[in-house]
Image (cartoon, rainbow, N blue to C red; front, side, top):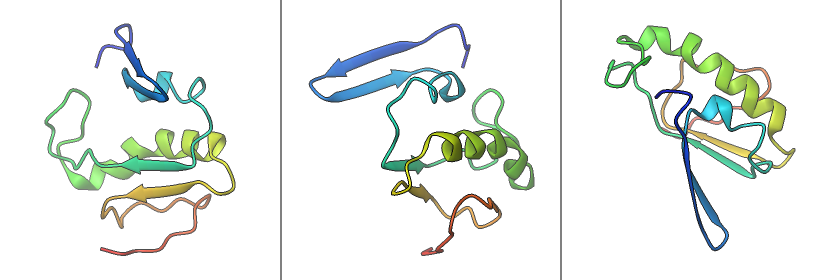
Length: 95
């Protein structure tokens, strides 16, 4: 995604952002839940690694931002990405 292009849609208390998430973390409200569903190392979108072993490096800046802006009660749902190790988060694997 081009970082210069972003769109925000608000419907009542819901806000949807079409933007590079790295440009949004500082302006979004502190989350009580973070859901990360992809990428998976398929090389489908621009900047996505083409192999799963490169995903840890790709995710590192995102995990750092999540830890910076999360509340103590924030839950992170990371879909079956057991290769990620982040010291800021307690990990419970359910898949």
